[in-house]
Image 1 (spheres, helix red, strand yellow):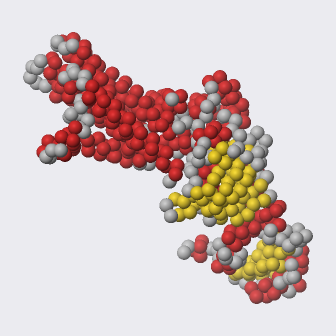
Image 2 (image 1 turned 180 degrees about the vertical axis):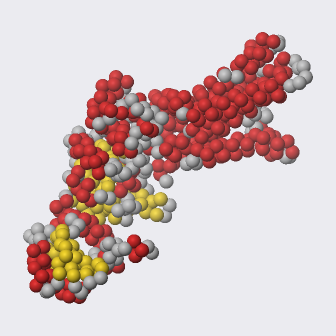
Image 3 (image 1 turned 45 degrees about the horizontal axis):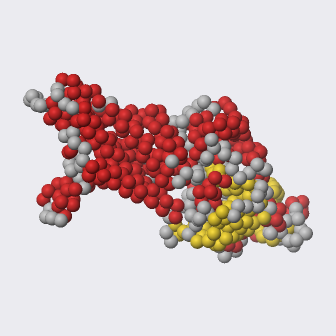
Length: 242
Length: 336
């Protein structure tokens, strides 16, 4: 775990030293702000709970976009600049490397999520919503972001180039949601419900968005994170034998 | 310290190294010598546990690389052909990170940093972002990250690649200064460089070790016993090729190559036992030819390198030379 924290610390600091962190932050926060004004607030008067729910809906989409963009900074970037050799010849284990890279990007994504707090605060101050709704919504955003980043970590272990990592992450995330969700709507059982169940946002974010924390959703996102990081670790381990 | 037993590494169906067998003792400085694609880097990657062998066994201080790679990595400092550095980081924080990554505590890193900075000659750039440094300084940072944890085994893959002549001399001195404190393995395709730095050479060709020994031992392999080894002499002679060949034919000449140099003159290359330069000059003059130039050619070791490589291919030592008779063609002749 010590190795993971070391790698995460260095990586997190590099977000502040390189333009890519600022670019991703600008894109995601800009997207969140636009969608909040155009979609959540809208032109018509709405109950504040509904506005907050829509804010989290668009915030969830923004978090997924952030996760996809941040995936380019993960293992593929180390490979592209040759610094993976430094990590792989050090006495740190593969799972520590994977976890360190994931933790750094997750921490950065959490900061991005917190930077949207002023939008939620506007609804909280001017409307009538509970703190629980706020907490559940942000918990959902963090879990959704963690799932997306874990899939991105797996993708970045598979591809040697940061840009192809972004494309593969987008493909993986897109395959789960909306593709799996939409196919699940029209496919017959048992395929339809199974595919529908895999949808990261459409199936497993709705309750958080409405202010509810369902254990099944938490377990689903935790499972995606665990399995994706485990797969990334196995890919790194297998690379030594190739 | 290192025992490599019948180690092979395949990438798909391509063998990068095949049935390697060698030992390296504690404190030795060993050079892996070979042309590009000979398998030097693959061997060093295997020894640093960056990569695992397809078959065979590697042990470092009794630790099996396939069973305890993690423990071996604690013993190893590795500089690949491109230094593994983060361009956005400054030198000192980077070295601190590298030290901590290699298992040093905060206090230990703080104690070790000034020594490492001095050993690598980084005092002037310690606060600079690595991305702003020249290639030579980046290479020094690469050395520094490899020695920061005082590894028992230091592996340097082509450490002088891309350096200018001044930087090469500096790097050579730095590597020499590290001898004694570490067992050093380094690779290069530049014979003269590796011979100056290392105690022992392992010559690789097409994934195999084709010869090993000291510079003298390897040089002697081409010369007859007691003859002082082989010497290559290169000449420029005014006259016909056949007349030149006849003039240079001498009982001590092992191989004579003659090829056109320009209008009315030829180039010749003679490999002979011992130093026969004066005799060769006299022979050319005696034959009524014009001696335009005479110089000592490539070193015996260099010759041995080329020869051993060709022997390993199952080709006669002079085959390639004969196929490419002109060492110094006009630019338009060089084009395929």
